[in-house]
Length: 104
Image 1 (cartoon, helix red, strand yellow):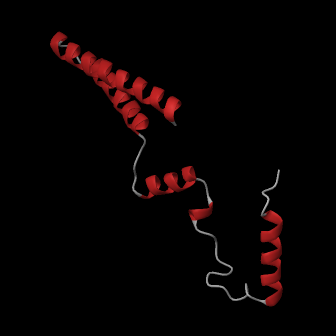
Image 2 (image 1 turned 30 degrees about the vertical axis):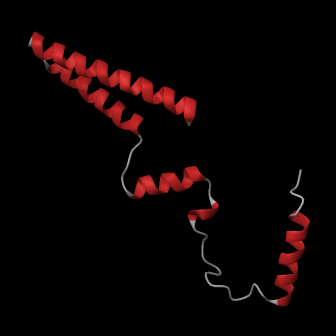
Image 3 (image 1 turned 180 degrees about the vertical axis):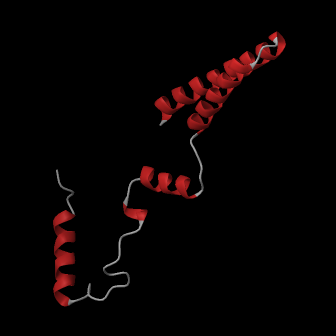
């Protein structure tokens, strides 16, 4: 279903175009900014520009690193400490995924 004002807006824009009100506007012929895109597109652009990563991605990388470290350790105390770190990271990762699924 169309918005009730859509026909009126279309008529106003068409009349303005006929009168030439839309000619020579600043930025004419240039690409639109990200303002017309959805919130996710804007957020993704900002995160990319600032080299930011979602917390779940960071935690997943830390889990991989912790698993790799665990494979190299032979001392039982060091292995136990690393397993504790790994379990903590996995718990935080699971909570982050659950929060993302639940709240977006």
